[in-house]
Structure formats: structure tokens, C-alpha cells
Image: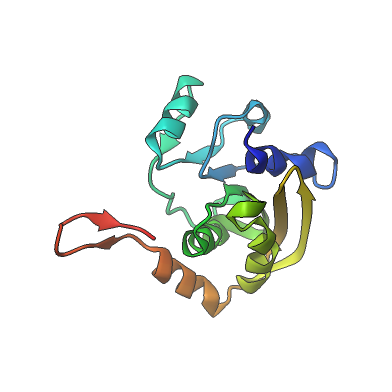
Length: 171
């Protein structure tokens, strides 16, 4: 069982927050039964095996983070262990949200789940809450005023060319 994925829907299933309405994006998306309740969310998944599982459910998947600004009412995000990448995903989600939109993220405790709420606060989210269950943590907040830390997180986590190899890498 993927604890972070399960915890992502836990605050919704326990009525701590309402099911997302309006346009929803799911960053680092994974196949899950609750996807059916979200209608046609904008799905991002760069890891091919996870993307394939979503495509097998007849879902359209974007390997790159969507660049839409202020287009979503809700952003869901599974956070990776790498703190730089996690901040990058949250900052990207911040830009995707409309005014007063909500970002809900989750991570396994061993992958830094305990830092999710702190990251949300540092990146300009307000009314941040969190819940811990099944060795993972979910945190959510409402888009507040943009802070300089958003630009820094986007710079630090952006893909960059490795001149020696010609490959593109992301933290």
C-alpha cells in the first residue's frame, strides 16, 4: 500500500475538507480509485511506469509540470523524498492555483512527510492544517500572498542542462 497516496485522500474521506470542485490538477499523480470522483483532473507524472498505469485507466497524463497560471481551484500533490523537488512541486502548484485555491499534498513520513506543512507555510499558504495517519502525512492550505521563496523554489528545482553529458537533470 502506498501510504502517501492513501493519506492524500484521507482529509477528504474524513470530511476535514470537501471534495475538490472546479478544475483540479494532480502533481506526481498515481492511479487511485478516488480519481473517478475528480472528473477530468490535469494529471502530471514524469515516471513512465506510473504514467502508464494512469494511461491504462484511460487518463491523459502530462510528463512535464503544467505551466498554466491561476487556472485551478485545487491542486493535489504527492511529494517526493527530495526536499528541493518537493518545494518545487508545491511552488508550481501555488502558481497553478486561482486566488484562494487549495493545495493538498502528502508524503510518507520517511520521505519527509513531517515537513509538508512547514513548506506550505514557508511558500505562502495560509490556514495550513495537517493530519498524520498510516506512516504518512497530508497537509493542506489556501493560496495566500506570493512570497520570494516561491521564485527561489522554482529556480532551485528547475531542470538544467548538464554540459558534460548533454543530459537534462532535475534535483
